[in-house]
Image (cartoon, rainbow, N blue to C red; front, side, top):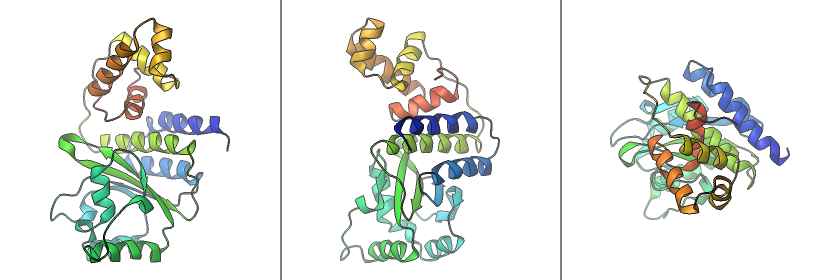
Length: 241
């Protein structure tokens, strides 16, 4: 797979998801796409509240049913080092990035070993920041997924957009925010891979002004990162590529 295909994969999926009308169809489309990167399982979850069963916050799943049984019966959601790490992260991470103390967290260590024994292999978790500091997540695993400096941004973008689409199908449609023409221009150039300095030169404005427009657009769209803002702007047809 060459680098240009990563962006094509992401934006093809974004365009396709917009036409889907239920969560299962979104999960299927996302699974087919990430399968090309070597992922075999896929999970969309909301942020679990204290005392809440894990299966009650699952938005969509393409994971083994037996694993959910083990996870729920053991009530591991409340001792899971991956969940704790998810709440503190804004960037995608692998399970191997998660740090925990086996002596101080015996059940957490037990769970991490169960994951390895179950054969999940290598896993990537994409945090989905939400309101009031809550964090949902998209998790993918496979025996040998393709995770490179070039593929990870595309996978990150696809996860953000697919989760947003699935969550949007579960709630009442929201009204679109208003973006100014300049904010749309800036996001379009960001989506094209231009730096703030480059965009300033193109639009004949200061780099600081570019950053201000990008930050304002990101806030208006309710996004946590510029990558998520770009995905939402494409979804709402504020920009195109």
